[in-house]
Image (cartoon, rainbow, N blue to C red; front, side):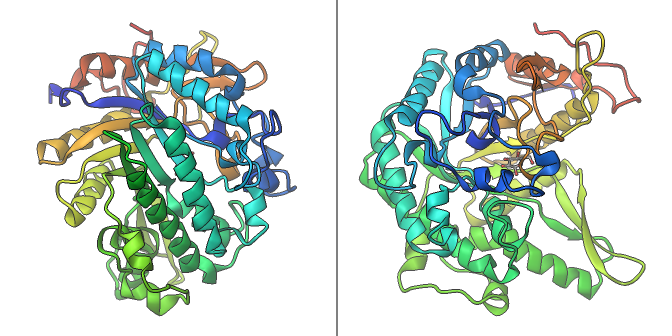
Length: 448
Ligand code: BGC
């Protein structure tokens, strides 16, 4: 208990993604992405919400950076919108779109905030989807060309790069109807993964060719590990299949250049000679998104299912899993957070004690992992502000700031005031952990 102070130089940040915050979906030459098409298709996204305006960050990024400064952030993770830079996914560059990112990165650097850029957070240019998207091997080459272009453009400015955010978020769009492009065919699972990882490996090779100095590159993988409630053989089989399909497939691929046998047994997909060498090209750090875990259970009718479990130790376990592949790999916790039924109360605040308790508990596990030898270098809270939560539209709020969408006003929630203190202190103080909603004292919420 008491204080848990993180290593000197530990980066404290927040994360966002282009489609979730930028808006300006058809401005300054931006081409459509699969998420534009998907959200514009009736019935796909909750309440018909779209990212057309989202948080209007495209126009408000300077104010957003001021808010980051107030919080004391030392780093900020964002993603590039591929189709804002290459409206067709390849070919001609859209200079206005590119200029937006130069302005954003310059303003971050000026504010002393380390940019951490993700090349792909699920928003494939529609033009590439029209040619088969991630089922088309060529998409991996287009991605490598897009990546190489950005490496050249931002060399010397951006020191932290990730190829892909959560490849699972892309796979879901091919195997279920709930995410873009909404293909809904379970058989496609491994071919999509394989092409995504090929894109990752090719981009890492471009990064090396570009001689990026002290800049580093990694991949962001999300870990929601499956554990069994009753440990029946059926539950164990289900959990093993899901762990392989959603996590170990990626980790085995990028660290060992193989896929778990169960994925070959369950899916048909094409791997060409040399692919696994490309996929396992060494990279510099592991980005880890961790929100919790899933418990596999058997219902009254004997059917197997799984349910989300808020379990802070999932963070520690996810780090341990990554370290079982490469014990000294530098790790960034690139996302962690929770949605709450936030209410802007009459006193002008959002009292989200429950979220503070969540963040505190997960950060304490990050701390514990560091004590046990993990080289964790930074933590990014999801998210800087409420935003477009994919299939759930604006119905879920994850932000440090409450966004009043009609006015685009940003209001620091209590958790932002708490996080500001964590950053200023360089760690946690047990006295600062509130009780869960309704149980404890309310966290005194003002910025320092
Ligand atoms: C994704 C984010 C998403 C968050 C909360 C992560 O899986 O990378 O884009 O908003 O989880 O659901």
